[in-house]
Image (cartoon, rainbow, N blue to C red; front, top):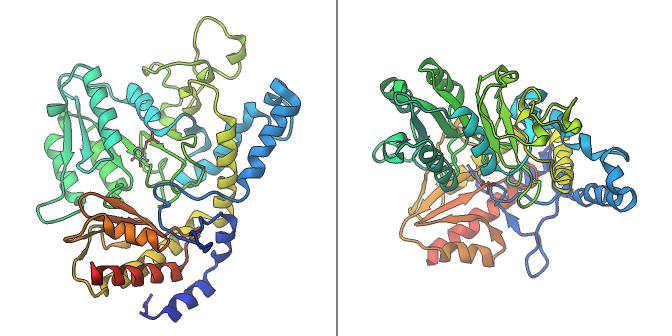
Length: 423
Ligand SMILES: *Cc1c(COP(=O)(O)O)cnc(C)c1O
């Protein structure tokens, strides 16, 4: 699409947007003067769907009126609640229903997956990650390496962008796999890197990793609900994600996991057990021995938080009617437009660190602002614009197709232009 630099053009795109009405399905935080703020932080905490309250009230009502019977009675018996959300969740990540389980939080799930899928041996013990991995993931991974008695300084391999570049080239990952693959037990990448917004070429990387008999795990925290995923077809071994970013299920929302169905009957894999992962046929007999239920559900440990699942149910409903394909189409156009306007800003201090190829990024554009500090962000905030700052000088902006508009992108860049002119 050819973009234009005047605000009329943005208004025109908003008028033509087939997803425009979805904005009304969310509460948009207000500025002190009562206007809608420009909320570009969906990669950090998604906004509240208007229907969440009803979904949660239904659970509260069941609890109030039925007590423990709510597990089995009412409109959405709690015992099946998590299972009932699987088809929609699986659709978003390109998985079979049986390959998805909704449970815990992201980092907890990462640990549980590594218990089963990181089995280092003296010859094959390394874990390959991207250099700008989400810090919590690095802590979790290092602690797993140490748990197995290995040394993170040799066992943790970090692939870097080339000198002078900001993103990691697929060919560099492939070459490193060819060189070190024999000693790599696990390749663990963020589907979309949290800092640069780079969407990795997962199928290519996964294929090369498999060639060298490495397990492939993905952290989809910044990818789920953002970019198209096909976890089953890409033959990914496992994946974890949270549901409070692009998935809009609320702060600390219940997270999820993917385990490929090729492991559905791998009952001999080491795993940390709990009653909820037990075979559904015998779970409530509560015998002395743990018999996992087949497929991803067998990794559950505890009974899930139904209030959190209710918020997720409200959000999944919206995703289903909007459809990932339409969301992706709008997302590409929204951030293509943002890129176009940022390229034309008068200050020459801005440089994009997100890939320019639309296929290698999601909603988020990140850019560094030379010779600046966090006061740039503070000034944006004062004008009712919310985005994210990472030291030393990176601004992360995520126009989200469900609730953001083209005019917001226009107004944001105009404001940034003004701020940088005096900064
Ligand atoms: C958001 C995010 C996390 C946060 O982990 P929690 O367990 O939800 O606190 C970790 N890793 C990645 C890649 C993320 O995007």
